Image (cartoon, rainbow, N blue to C red; front, side, top):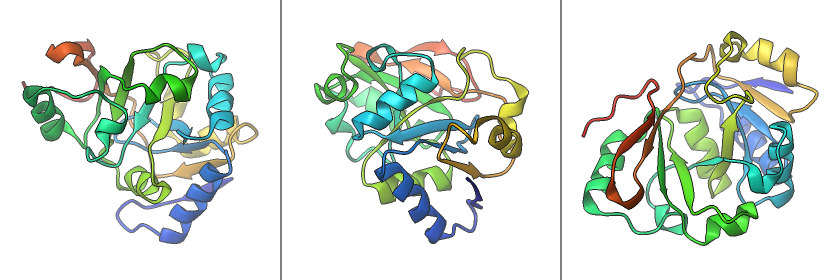
Length: 205
């Protein structure tokens, strides 16, 4: 199913439709401030496993990030961070960044893994932020492609995404033409700041 949501004039009924799909364990494709992404309810184990399968992986091998609506509940998923790291997140988010931080025990429990880190995203996109707000908890998210560093041109066109993936995805949100640039991945483990992948976002240290 393909629906159109204008982030500058959001139809709350469509947001609720997307949230219903998520709560039933469905996977959605949605716009961000970078490329289109796909995701599911972080607290639905079956949906997480299905999302991993779409990437050709077992859940415990998947490297999903989580999308939050803001920083208020960060401590549920991330261990305490120092003041400088918090200030970096606060001035960079919402924005085209994925921040790698030390995970709480909640993350390995959810993902059936021993991973001690998690990527945090708060995209500068009103549609996805609203979906997460109404859902009431983060979404697990990943790129559409198998090779995270290879972004194919069809990812920018929601209609082409629909033609290719409609049979595998419960809901695809048309938020207009996407971008070809990925997010900038910033490792902030132990208070150190290291750019793992330079994307569209420029880090202000």
